[in-house]
Length: 163
Image (cartoon, rainbow, N blue to C red):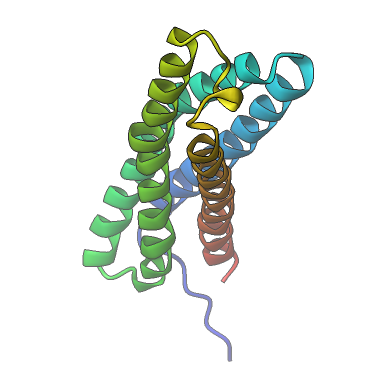
C-alpha cells in the first residue's frame, strides 16, 4: 500500500511556490527589459544606463522576495520540512549575485561612465574602456546566474509539491 504524505503546512508551501514563481518571473522580465533597452535605443551608452537603472530598481524587490522565501523556508526546515533544504544554496547564490551586481558593479560602471563623460568622450573611447567591458561581462554573467538560480528555486519548490 502506498501512503501519500501531505505537507504539514500546505498554505505556507503554497506561499513559497507563489513567491518563487514571482521571483523567477521577475528575473526573466528583468532580462527581457534589459534586452529591449539595448534593442530599442540606438545609443549603446544610453541603453546601458537604462538597463542598469532597471536592474538596480528591481534588485530591491528581488532581494526582498528572495529573503522572504529563505526566511519562511528556514522556519519550515526547523519544523521538520527537510525537502526545503535544497533551495537554500540557490537562494544564497541568487542573493549574492543580486547584491554584487546592484551594489558593487553597476555603481562602479556608473562612476566610470561619468568620469569619461566629464572628459568629453563616451566610455568606450576612454582609457577605462577595457575595465568597463570586463565589468559589463561580469554583470551579464551574474544576471544569467540570477535567472538560472531563480528558475532552479521555483522548480525545486514546484517539484516538492508533486512529491
